[in-house]
Image (cartoon, rainbow, N blue to C red; front, side, top):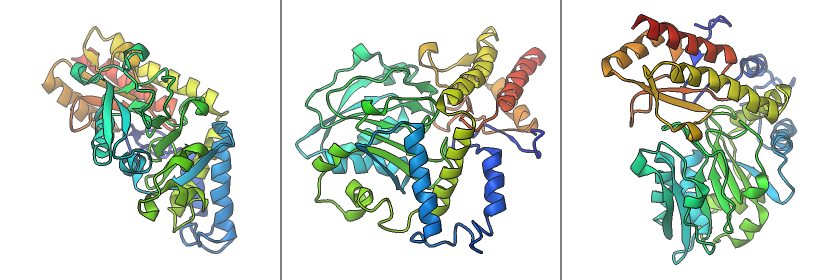
Length: 363
């Protein structure tokens, strides 16, 4: 166990580690928020107290990411998985085409949903190479007339991450569920960004969408009210009852990001954490074998295997005994995975790297 209040060494892929200070603040305020005599979970979403929490969360996200005024920020429910269908429902006509770049399971799922509404085209895929790398920019076969181009910026199952985003004529739409707020980005490159909160933003239950306003003018209007982006942009995400506790927690996580020094500091910290574990892999003389090609390695999800399957089972068993949580790879691929999201401390990553070196020395 970690020495801080006997907290686990948490490498869960999602829901994942939250900053300890955020959890402690929530604990202090859980029963009586802002002297209201009520929990944040008991407040009306129409109350001034919650409205302040809600609007401050939006403002903090806008500041941290330098989101321009021609973009809306909204909070939705349904996770990133609902966005897989909501995006083509709003922007893909039955006779229209959208480009999808396949880099893992989640982009495959997004593609499958788009097929229900129009004609998605695979503009590039690394599936034949077991999703070990991100396609090079010059490998993308993009259609300038496409309704949009869809990418998944970080692939949690395979441990790959886009390091450079394509410049597209069609609006670029990105699923950033597992690497949002992990490094600075230029929002202007994107038409729409979406992310489930449960990796870097807070607890599960909230989905953040950052959408360029001109896309709203082109959206399909003949769809259910709750599946229109305009329903939420026109009502400050308060058309119906939002996930109030999740939004409160998201706001507290954004305060924590500010306190760390912003995204530049967060990015440097993430690089240092990931390097500890990647060094343990690279210096193991193939005792540990990374899944992702080096140029495509994720700073959020570090995937690796041991050469011997029985030894791999023993590694995971001993790691569990030592207090490490969430190191099993995704059920679809097996192996090992360490998810090193923003809130995972450097000391936790150092402990894992040390454990890996010690385990190799024993075996």
